[in-house]
Length: 248
Length: 315
Image 1: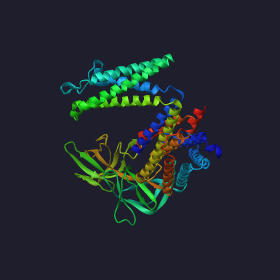
Image 2: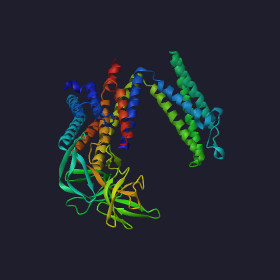
Image 3: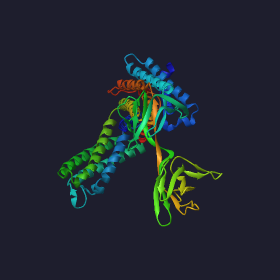
Image 4: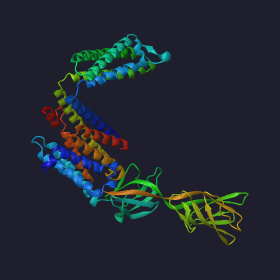
């Protein structure tokens, strides 16, 4: 029951995120996700390997087991400067208003950051491969985090290229799809909770079944194309998390 | 019916039913006539789903019809089980049998004894909290554990757990003359001996307390503060001795020159289990399966805008 509710919650969270994106695409700046993703990549680049990217170096592991990876520090340094500059430009443009010309430069800088980060991460992973299973390979986790942030930034930049009406329509469709998947999983959770209660506790009317029933009803309510879509999807997500936390 | 089929009212009705149904919101505490309100909210939700199905466009009716049919079946089954089903508890000590259980209503109020239609007994207690049930027509005992209910005669027996009866199967008594201490075990109808003393249990108090009139009574069946009144016989003379586990030697009896202590207690345990009879459970299961198929049938992998977003775009 817990696993199903967790899957449903993940799908509901996806539906909620697409729902929020739909609203933003319809009414707001399409580059806002890129600004957030650029900020995240900057922060990760500053934090990785205890800030050694700032001095143009990079390595994995600590002490005698540390393995320096030459060249990667420079690439990640370029990515850091580009991401920082692009995010600052976008942020400044948003605060100042207008100045459309700076948007192109900011987007270009953010793409440069994506490219430099991707090449740097790929090079570092290849260089660290011989240490697989040993201490220096533990730095691969940080590199995967960088790769995820760079991928998120690239996705946000690609999304921003769509016309806002198209982006909103696509986001609305995906929000509906994920919410419907989550609602289906919530109904399945009810089925499993009821069967489990019947076989183990002698009744299908257990607290877990009732909580799952309630979540399934909220899931059906979240599918309706009416007001407060994001709020309804948020309540649906909260109810699924409630099923997990109650120890379904 | 038509207004209920609109997305806004339908979402509101489903939300309301979910609110009343959710156990964590404890609607029974703040909602007067909660059972009636729950039934009304769920009925309204089912009718709204039905109205939605009836108003659906041709070619897109399968999903809403399946969801509506599933909702109606679940509601009908739950209502039937509420009215025609039974629930309660069955309490038995080892070796005891009963032909009925203590029924209670869904609100927890006692309704008295309900016949089972057969005799059920507890053959023995199992390690880990389970019990071996003796059921008619079965070759051997049927094991009932916390993880597996037992179904017999249309009833489901589940969640066995030990409950103290308030009695004791054995008390260990220490008798000291100041030089050496002798121990003996006594129980109901089972006297013991310590040297030249014959000791019998007269009364046992698992959670001893004195009332306003200084009369002993037990606050609960849990052995929190066990005490006992013993009958001690020596050379044809009988004495009554009071022992309290928390205060050994509290009662000095003139003429006996011994002190008594209650060293250990083996409380008598009974097994309490839940009893349920839900004749429409299979229909409820079918309803949930139909609703699941209905939701799955509405899945459209091609992302398309919802009508709300289309309206917003149009604006």
